[in-house]
Length: 395
Image (cartoon, rainbow, N blue to C red; front, side):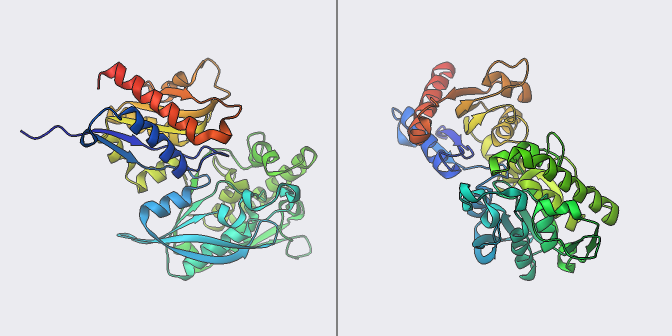
């Protein structure tokens, strides 16, 4: 008779924004899980650690670690024209080389001091340099992770870097910066052949369109430093850019997800008609084999900084809960805070249950001073969750 297999707990949170990156969050939660199981023989316990992401900051690092990449360093144009030393990864896979590009490496918000942020004049062109470098190395499969950028140019910069020309009524090239798009008269395209041959997947963590009340400027402008008085003019300029892409290139780029990365997603779509937008959480899960890990677990512990209205729609926790539901595996979550919830939903359990049709427990760490002690709080919350689950299930 074979010995019973160990109790297997899968720990797979994303970052706790502002406190812990995904690797740190995973380590902290796993520590709490092990402490909760400390009374069991070591041979009877297996804690599997798998940091996750959803297309936002850190996605490139997680994919790079999971796939095993060659790191390429390149000096590119930063969001405000300053030189930035950015990195991306190239992984060798059965389908050919794959480039994993995180936009924040080139134009990340964290690279720009708060006092100099003025996203109306920022440019995403540095991201195009990373893409073109990968194409120049013969790579024809590219993943672009768009979260965490300082830019708000509707993606015009990355489109320019990938071969599009933005011209005013006098036939002059427009300077970088989204506000200049108000003078856009026509677009000329000359994308490099390597780009048209490439399979480009854009990993996003939200479904915001490019413009309008739910668009890039309205939703993300203030957190990138945009003044309220600038917002209407910048949104109108970006809308003009989207219309010009439609009229001159035949592309419709103001689609769900196009507003991510300050519109970088729309810029990639403008330059490459065949690029496709994908849920970052689903893409990362697929490339890292998360489904099989979930199915083989007795308990899944996920988490993020905030469980809110967005959790069930494209974020890591919502996707992990879906996978756990489909596999019939219990899933619990650790969070830093529960914020605004949809109408009719009273707590975090109901929030995820509404999306997954299954219960997902949530333990919420204290908030006011938790940022300074995030790892400790996450460990404690995870331990309480696991002990409660053990008591409830008699595992």
